Amino acid sequence: MEIKVVFDKETINERLHIGWGLSVLIDNKILFDTGEKGEWLLQNMGAMGINPDDIESVIISHDHWDHTGGLESLLRAKKKKTIVYICSGFSEKLKELITSCGGEPVEVKKFQEIGKNIYTTGEIPGTYKGASMPEQAVVLKTENGLSVITGCAHPGILEILGEVRKQFKKEQLFFVMGGFHLLEKDTGEIAFIVDRFKTMKVEKAGPCHCSGPEAEKIFAKEYGENFVMVKAGKIVSI
Image (cartoon, rainbow, N blue to C red; front, side, top):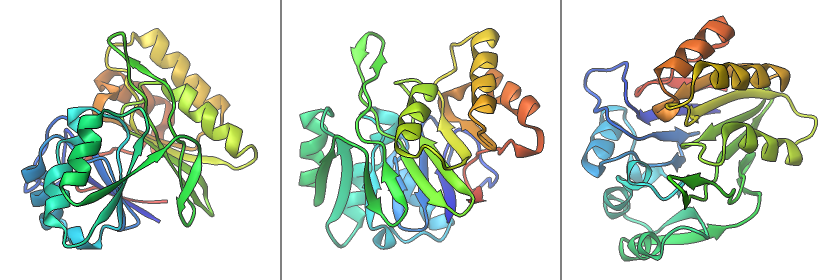
């Protein structure tokens, strides 16, 4: 499988837009999150040779502007109805937007397979600034083990990995990437999380987006050659 980073705060290609948010394409057919702005998402896709009509479905990790911002433009650019996997706790406004743009919202509550060896964790309770912020992550199963992609990890990155472990008790945790929501955490908390990654035998790590520069620095130091720098334009083979 391949993971193509379509949008993030940094890039390996100066032709690509960067900003606050995340969007990655899984195996050239499933888009996970849509970044902050539709125009930028579509332009990045064009620069990377990605045809919107080749995208079979979209997964939205959580109902925040920097992950849903490109959704409307993407759905309107597609010629056929597209399934959008969302959590049942997402706003009615987002659900109505998906429908009005020709998408088909599918609410997920529990862990389930949505494509061959591609799973959603289902809705995991989380909070943001004291308010409820349910979130889902994606799990990819390959011969190397499990890869987990998170949007912002509002429920907690360790909690998300714990939910994955409940479903896959014996498989290797090969790669964990995405927003880990560690931007405001101190070095002690970050070091603890990195240590737990090692205890859980996560082989490769790729924090980006809201993970924060300090977390990225500590993960890079501790993971060495198994640290994956996640930037727009990057293609990661798993």
